[in-house]
Length: 237
Image 1 (spheres, helix red, strand yellow):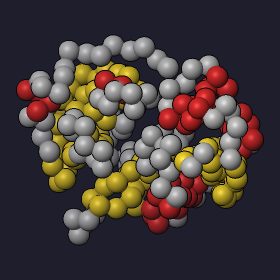
Image 2 (spheres, rainbow, N blue to C red; image 1 turned 90 degrees about the horizontal axis):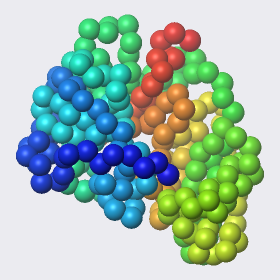
Image 3 (cartoon, rainbow, N blue to C red; image 1 turned 120 degrees about the vertical axis):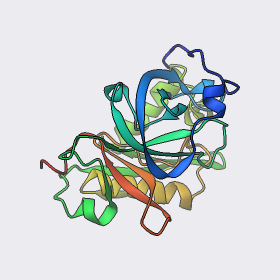
Image 4 (spheres, rainbow, N blue to C red; image 1 turned 180 degrees about the horizontal axis):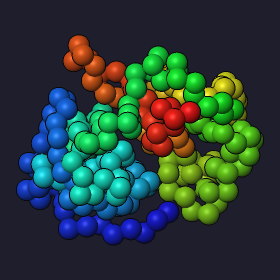
């Protein structure tokens, strides 16, 4: 677990309380970006790192805006997610002035763009009466052993605490599916976390090496899942 600075902003800071909320895309300038341990925003729950973003429209947290965007004008949308922690999430749409670098695609469009072949797996672990669904490009048994090793080393995610609680004895471990690319695997992870109501997952899933599956708004003002092409692979592959 990282031990990162907490920054000067709190939930009561004016820049946080008055951060712009808009499901419509808007332009903002990134003034600063700090990597912060997630426990700042939800103590004893989130242990992974989150980006805290200073902008011309307030201070947000984000998984898609990073230090590479400092000083740039970007198009975004913002709002709270299903777990209301007070802070507003900032979601990247595009970087202004970069017309040849699309970032987000609707699912069918992304899958039509010759997604690189990457064998990946979605798996489920049951511990007691709780479960965890994960995504991996590793051998699934190797990923299971990684969870156990991290738990023994003091990992603080819910899955790590559950392994320690049950003495590293799991009720069951199964591979739900094998997939030919990261996008299909990440979509399956999200579906199965929801299907099995996985209380040991920290979030809704969908975070990969080259792609993230994230909610966005379509032309009908509906929230849909879209593919975030983190490394601009699809338009160059």
